[in-house]
Structures are given as structure tokens and as C-alpha cells.
Image (cartoon, rainbow, N blue to C red; front, side, top):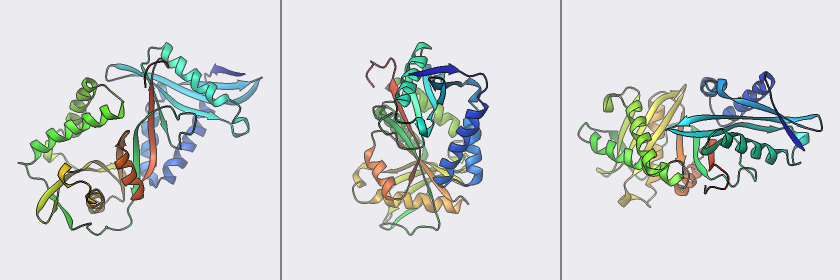
Length: 305
């Protein structure tokens, strides 16, 4: 039987946890500086983590780390880590730890439980719906334009309409993933865009692109350069509805990759929301690896996920 004991000193667990994260991020193609930045972001929340040691008949089995915090006004739990030693794996300890984490977070008022995975979910988290994936690809050289699709800077006259469309699309992505309600997603959209674009089109280190084919606008792009050391983050590469299904998605990605290299970065990163299977398949076919995958369920466990 798996027993859980809250530990006062989590030094040993944290050292192993960070080592595993470092190896996973490096394997996904992040450079040393970007890996260090990601680890700093992870450590920023360490003060709120609760770490429990798992044991079975007095033998150490592994660790599970959890936390509960407000997210947009809603208490949300998170499984920070769940690690069973290899020689104890497959004996039910993983499921016991997951169940313990769900109960611990629910008892503290969490209405949702999140987990961020750096490896395939497997059966343990298979019933946690995918809410989003962080994908990355290291770019060796500028790709040639695809289907004669080119990119030019967005004009001030084009920006207001683009911004309104992007905010609406962002809300739709969040709601479709099942992460938040429409009202919560709308509030998150307003907050996020206000923070990301304080100077609108003039916000430094951002590229706002209009994608064209034969002089006709077919889509837009928004990229943040230096998001991490050497990494550009693609907030949006969007093809207009009437131009979809013609291979222009890959053309948009090629434009984003050229802009990434032009800005001095070597890695392009995207988030793809859960439920967007078309985009996931596109990123996979283009060589973008999953750096992290976010999954979540509603709490209590009996609630619809």
C-alpha cells in the first residue's frame, strides 16, 4: 500500500526534478540560455509547492509535488511532478499518487487540476483532456518561400482590425480546449493582450506580418523575438478561412521561420491548443517537437472534464 508523507526538506527531490527538466528541454532543442530561463520560471513557484514522499512497507517509492493557486479568480490545482523510482514502477504507485494529488487539491478548494508533461501521458493521464502543447523547432537555415507566399510588415491601418480578430480567436481557442468558460477566456484575453502589447504595433521585439500570395493578403503573423534566449515565440500564424486547405499553413510557418532567423534567433516556439488536431498534425509534419503538454480535469473527479 502506498503511503504519503509531506516532507520538510525537498532538496533531494528538487535536484532530481530540475535535472530531468533540464534534460527534457535540451532534448527538445532549447539552448543553454533558454533552458536556464525555463528552469528559472519553474523555480519561481517553488515556494508554494507541497512535496510528499511515497513509501511502501517502509521502502521509499518516489515523490509527488502539488500546489493550489488562483487562476483568473478560480482556484486551480497542479501536479508539479509525479515520480516513481524505476524499480517500483508498474505496481500501482503512480495511480495512487495521482489519486492522492486529486484529493489533496480538491480538499483545498481547487476546481481544476492541471499537469504539465514533458513526456507522453500514457495511461496515467490518458483521461486528462489535452488543453495545449508547447512545440519547438530549431531552424538551421532560412526556408524557401512556400507556394510563393511572402510576408510584409503590417501597417497601422491594418492593426486595429487584426487585434480585434486575434483577441476573439484567442478566446475561441481557450474555450475549445476546455480550459476556461467563455467569460473567463474573454477576461484572460483582455489581460494577456494588454500585457503583451503595451505599445500596440510599436511594442519592441515583435514582428507583425501580413502574408500575401500574388499580392493578395491571405493571412497574418505575430512573433515575439527573444522570448527566451535564442527563441522566437509565435503567438499567431493565421490563414484566412477562404484560403485554407491549400497548403498555406506550411507557407505561414516558413515565413515565421525566416522572420525568426532574421531577428537573430534560431528556435521557433508555438502553443497549439487542445482540440486543434489540424494544427497539431501540421506542426508534427513540419518537425516541431512537443516541449510540454498541458492536460487538466475538473474537480471533484466526478465532474465533467
